[in-house]
Length: 235
Ligand code: BV8
Ligand code: ZN
Image (cartoon, rainbow, N blue to C red; front, side):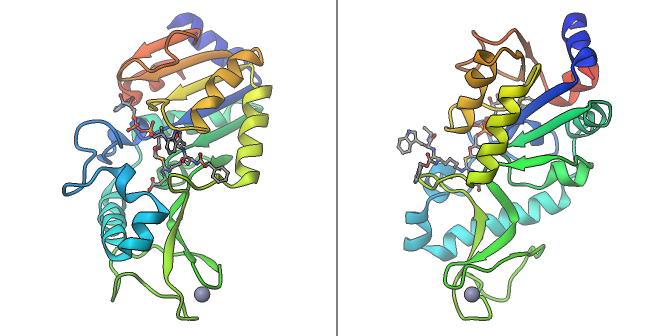
């Protein structure tokens, strides 16, 4: 722990990658852990363009369920520790796979959202994107003024990541002296590929996760524990 703390203190360029695990202590279910299910569905079955095309109402019911839950959640000690680390690090990029907006609410500044934002909606007809904080809608699926169906502005399985976000993430992980990987099972690509990329580019890689991941063997330090407990000790 002491050595990892020193790496973080001495680094002037830090890149962080977070996954659903950092929001678990905020009460937001993870994708693959216990409690990650909704009704009888798996996220992989709902977070796809095919599911939305087939049954937009059910997909929207899942997102409204998540909106309600997240609106009542508070950022965790893990989210807050990353804000403190950002404030004292000259070059800091927070890359997240999460769409819950908790990093924004914690006060993080330089956030790179690889999988979009649950609080933004996009019209499938005219393409307009707007921030929409509602946790209930008069009708599901909601419609745009133009009459088109609205969808959550998130990246579903089989969809490409926003090119500018991916570019920012690659550059940050390639330039980092220290890469901090928090609360991700490291099975979803291309996001998970940022971990070996940082390692190959010469970063010291620190992983904080409740369980081992496919990359636990290549990182420099792997801390088994809760983000809300380990990050405050590291920062
Ligand atoms: C793409 C947004 C190509 C939506 C998400 C085979 C078939 C089909 C596709 C593929 C395939 N093989 C590979 C693929 C590609 C696919 C993929 O990787 N699939 C995986 C499942 C095998 N990837 C894609 O489809 C990507 N797009 O490849 O496009 C393309 C290219 C060009 C042109 C056209 C197409 C898109 C992937 C993005 C999907 N969207 N979410 C929404 O959220 O509503 S992914 C979803 O998984 C979330 O974003 C989530 O963040 C992400 C990763 O999950 P994690 O964050 O890691 O969460 P998880 O629950 O898995 O793990 C939590 C971890 O935390 C656990 O390890 C747990 O132990 C730990 N933990 C728990 N509590 C704590 C904790 N740690 C610390 N403290 C705690 N308290
Ligand atoms: Zn529209």
